[in-house]
Amino acid sequence: MLRWECEKKDVIHAIMIAELKPSIRLFGDLYPWIWELESDGEYFASEYFSGDSDRPQLSITPKSWLYLQDPVQIAAFDCEFNFVSEDRNPLKAEVPVSKWFKLPKKMVMEDVKEHCIFLLKEVEDCESKHGKAQAISKIDTLLGTRERNTLLNIIAILCKEAKLDPTTTSKTAEHIVATGDKMGVNIGQTTVRDVLKKIPDALRTRMK
Image (cartoon, rainbow, N blue to C red; front, side, top):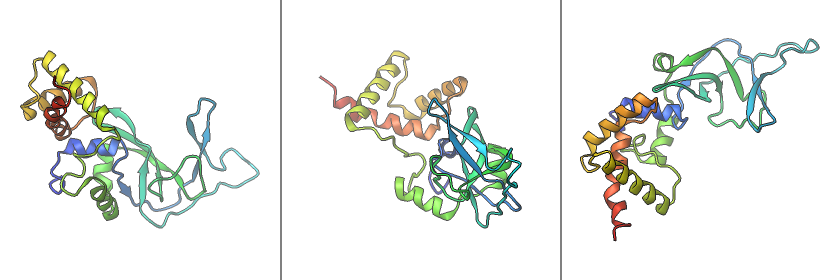
C-alpha cells in the first residue's frame, strides 16, 4: 500500500473486481473442474469426471503458484473464492484439464491476507498498466472522454444537491465512502478522491 500510495480499501476493491489477483501455493491433489454453459448464457462449474462410474476420479498436483479466480462479493469489503488456476486469465469457454481447480475449502478475504501473496509479475503488470505511482488507486474504466465528462458533471450536480463540496476532496470522499459502506458498496477513499479531483476540468467542458 505504501508502494502504491493507496489505502487498504483500494487494494481490497482491486481484488474483488479481479483487477489484482492473489496467488496461493497448494500441495496435494486437486480436482480439475470444467465450466458448462447454461441456457441463460451463464457458466456454472461442473466437477470433471464426477458421477461417472466408468472413469476414475482424475486428480492433479499443481507444481506452481495458483491464482485465485472468480471472486464473489459477500459483504462490503469481503468476497469468497472457490476456484484457482495455474493461468492468470483462464477462459471458461476453453477448459483444458489443467486450467481450473476447486479449492479444498472456500477462501474469504481474511484467508487471502493470511495465506496469499502477490507474485512479482502481478505487481509489475499492474504497475505497467496503471503507472507505478498509484497503480491501484488510478484504475480507470474504459470510458470515452465525452461519457466520462458527462458522468463527472452528473456527480457534481448530485454533490451540489446533497450540499457536498467536490472541491474539498478529502472531506467529501470520506462522506461518500461512509455512505457507500452503509449501502454495502465497496469504494476506496483514494479512488473517490481521484474522481472528485477530475470534476473541475469536466465542468469547464460543459459550462455555458
